[in-house]
Length: 279
Ligand SMILES: Nc1ncnc2c1ncn2[C@@H]1O[C@H](COP(=O)(O)OP(=O)(O)O)[C@@H](O)[C@H]1O
Ligand SMILES: [Mg+2]
Image: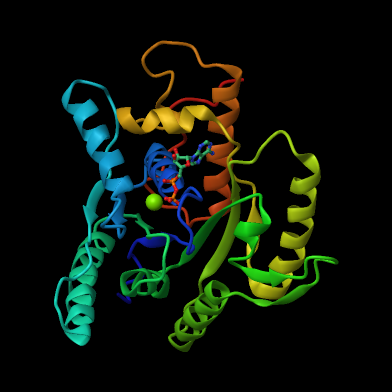
């Protein structure tokens, strides 16, 4: 995969369920397709298959006549081989087959990881050009990145997940590559300003110490939970003629800002958004 024209690989990862990896993955797909990029998605969460089911719902909407762009997509499930080494070889083979096929004919490949450590998840982290880690504004989620002293919030040490990313970055550096690690806050609440400020302050210190960029994420909005069944994203709302609420307009802006923060290489084919961000 040394071809310079190969796709940029964005991995959604952390070792916690429910932080917004799949929701963000789906929204990134939509936003990047809107920019005119050829997008593929790989779901590595073979148990929950949230992204696959989201995209199946979207494909069904397309079949029913809704005008939506679709990415290529595939799920890679865990191996059932009884032998550990055989299972790893099988997973590596199936993952790399899909990835190699996709990187050759897309501009971006989005990989959605399960919320736990697994061999497939490690393989994906090792291939990432960009690693995007969503987290809730909570010290429980922060604990996945580093251990923090409960009284003065001093940083005591990295978490297992940070160590994993560190290891992947070292391996990548050996072949001259880099992994751009971004931590995004998801389900940001408009309430609880005190907690938000505290988490934000520790995250800022951690970013320097551990080496990631903090990017503005997505606010808590009920609509995210409702869109799944229809296969829609915030960016698709309003296409059917109904006007957007203020909250939906703000949500779309957040999604587009998130995509901008990824700082992906431009592709010649990329065009301006299909429709201007509503004022
Ligand atoms: N910004 C958000 N606002 C409201 N609900 C959200 C938001 N992001 C995710 N959710 C909801 O949180 C739950 C977990 O999200 P999901 O994307 O499946 O997380 P993960 O893939 O990390 O397990 C889902 O019910 C999803 O609809
Ligand atoms: Mg998920």
